Length: 277
Image (cartoon, rainbow, N blue to C red; front, top):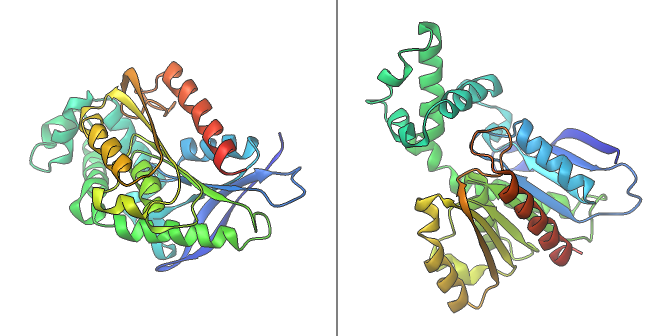
C-alpha cells in the first residue's frame, strides 16, 4: 500500500509539537485515527514503522514527538544520542539497568567504552531516567489530549473516531489518555504502567493491555488493575504472554519475541477494527 508520510506541527501545551503522520494515499474520505505513543526512545524508526503498519491497516497514524515540547528537543535527547543509549543498554543484561540508571553505580559499566563517549552517554541516560523527566508525565498527557483534539478537527479524519496505542512509557500514557479524554474510542497499552485506581472511573472506552510474563514489576499490578476496572464498570482485556520479557514487541531490540508480537499485533488490529469503525 502506498502511504503518505510526513512530519507536521500541531498546537500543544508549550507551543507547536512535531508529529510523524502516516496515512493511505488511496483514502478518498476521512479515516479513523490512531495516536502512536512513543517508548522512552522517542519517535524512532521503530515507532515510525509501527505508525506505517497502522496506516497500512486503514487508519491515520499520528506519533507525537513528546521530547520536543515547545518545538525544541534537548541536546541530550537528540536521536543519535538516544540510539547510542539504547545500544548500550541493549548490550547489558536487563538486571544491570538499575545500576546504569544510578549515577553512583554506572561508572564501572562504562569503563570499556571510549573515554569520549562516556560523558554524553551518561548525560543522555541521566536525562531519560531522571525524576524531572519522569515528572513530565502529566504534561505529556496534555500533549496527547491536544493531539486527539487536533486530529478530530482535521479534514482527513473529521467525524471519525480516535484511538491510541503506546509502548512502555507510551503504553501507560495511552491508557491514561483514556482517563482525561472522554471521546477516546479505545486504548492499547503495550507493557505500560496501568492508570491509578482513582482515575479508572473516568474511562469511557475499552482498554487492551498486552504484557510479557517476564516483566514482574508490571505483571504484579495486573490483578489489581483488572479488579479495579471491574469495580468501576469499565471494559478491560488483558493478555500476558508466557516467557516474554518487557518490550517483546520491539523488533529492533534483543527483547523481541516473534510469536508474542505476532499475536499482540493481531489483537491490536482486531481491537481497533471493533472500536474505531
